[in-house]
Image (cartoon, rainbow, N blue to C red; front, side, top):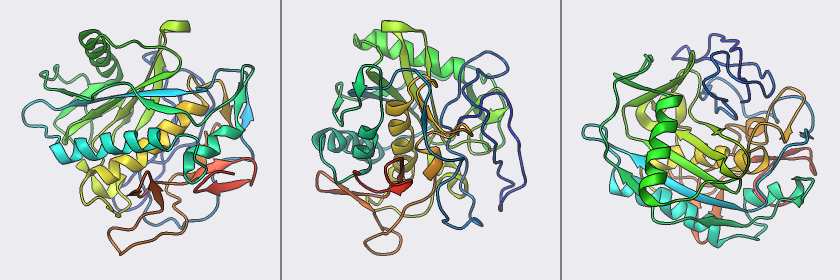
Length: 316
């Protein structure tokens, strides 16, 4: 959820998981970065209910991603695994989303009702190149979190993304987003907000103009399943939990890349308004799904549609 200065932490669920009140598109108190679209940990005691936040998404004058290109980085030094299956499932997902570009049958088409001064968003996604397995050693922990023994600050995550971009000759810009998937057991914090306690993922940016670097911090969701996994694994591995929050951040980066485009009066972006809301499901318990994209099944939250004033599973 978009809350950048203050966390209104309340007691929640089995783990004492934090919730938060959105505060609008403001920089974090320490000036380190901007946290957008943070997926709050799953509240097992909450019902499905309707959309969250306050009212319709409103346009605030900033840029959207008319088309989007995705790069994936898996930071997995020794002792912090990312299995080949985890990586291949996430890579398959981004390939499927790209292959289905223009289709009305999945959540990404709902983004096309939004736009900016240059016109509407197109469902036009691509994969920038082969994903990178990054085995660089982790820097010394720059923070402390509740669940892990190693903790990365947002600044450390940014630095590693920049390193991988340079090493691979990739080009950043306002139509490209870099997903940093960290290995199991790696924590992170932005200020006082930490993985698995206050968020499961978030998206952000650094720089500006044609050189802006859009990115998403994607901790390994099943490091703490009770916080970041709603329990359905249609692909049979831990990647399913991470993919749910990946979809959340991808859709929000498209509609509100720098915190100045589409969000409601409480600061909720399109993914925030439907976090942990899945709608009707198919398949067997434990492997249920609600999206079939390019022939493969996924368990992804719905996204908010102004057109229907509700959370949706497909184009509107």
